[in-house]
Length: 536
Ligand code: HEM
Image (cartoon, rainbow, N blue to C red):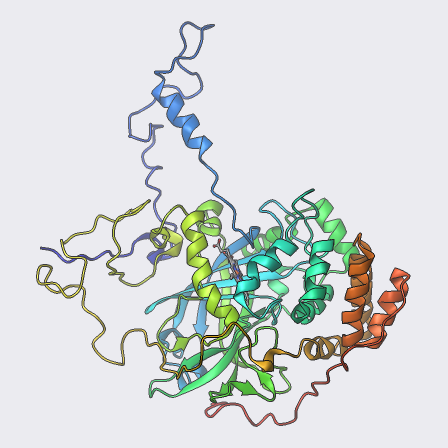
């Protein structure tokens, strides 16, 4: 019996894979029979009814009828590009992942997106942007599925359906398309106050980037890295655009959205076509892997918190350049699947309760969106290294597997496939102690909902601050329910009294007193705590 091996093709070369239904010079049916005409249906006489027996007509119309797949439940509108990541080797001291070795080049595919709008919505709306990167490494695909804002709305993944229900158009009128201009959005974030830091970033100029090329990206969660000797550290990932960070002003976004709803997509493709390849440095903040998983008073498992760079600088570990746009939007940008669980040896997740739920959600939704469990075989999703799993059959199975024994151990297929035989090869679930009673609660270290919003608001220049005030005032003025506006003003009072007073004035309401003292996370001068092996 031959080994049950599936080898990757197509995407591995970097060239677009050959389209199986686009070979030869002549128009054919899907079965390869040459066609004489595709413009006229078979009829009973030139003025007669169309005949059911017209196989080509039925095949053509029926295929068209099924051309659409469901759009992503979030991040439906996106634009992708291919490129390459080149590591500078600095991360090898803290991580055994092969693609982080000095001068290693790894092909990548990146998809930028908005979160709330439909697939055909405008690019320049006020929203969070997705920044998802697939690294086709020699050890398997690694996905860094991040956003352009370093903090998230909610602390627990179990609330994700709730925040998305609040952010998407309201169910009765199906308006508005914009993330932040409606009652359910402000109702949610003023009741689930952990969202306030993310909202402050969204209301700032970060929520209306000038282009994808000029956005930062953040992995948000804390990840655990392991080096070749088995030592671990905790990190947060950052993408820093070499083009600088730039935003539109609100009036520009309105003009762009009207005159060119594809503004960001066009900008990305035009830049690549012109040879002005956008690039980003990938950086990490490295922190010691202590049992508490708290750094400078900030809980590293809380995805609504970031670590200020004054407290822990970002160290560059490589550079990504996007140099090729997709040949086919559907096959690449639409069919790509990202999953925070796609990890390679040396990189592991932490117990961040948001990340833990993401590990289930992406694969689950993709089974519906991509029509079954075999989406890893799509050219854009294939690993660029040999794949030898024991998954068989299912909808859209493309592989013709050999062998008879897709189980282990077996005595029929020569024992194939073998497992990694030592600690230096294969994926490692980094051993970390787990103990505790089963509970539905969060650590008290997640309780502070305001200090990071305060920190962010107070870091803004006066022009940025003015934009922030106008954005809060405008978006809240679209709220029909005054009680919700008043509740959000209470949150602003807890973040920054001056900001609250200015927004209240704009809304014609009075500014409330804070219910909790505004938080003060002073950037600490103790920058020496950078993790045991950094800088290298
Ligand atoms: C899609 C980021 C939290 C569920 C995406 C995408 C990005 C992203 C960038 C678009 C991927 C693409 O371009 O195809 C994030 C970030 C999060 C977060 C940075 C928090 C730090 C969550 C949570 C859940 C979730 C908590 C669920 C519990 C989904 C789903 C999709 C998605 C279902 C659609 C995937 C698909 O259809 O392929 N997310 N997300 N996300 N996210 Fe998240």
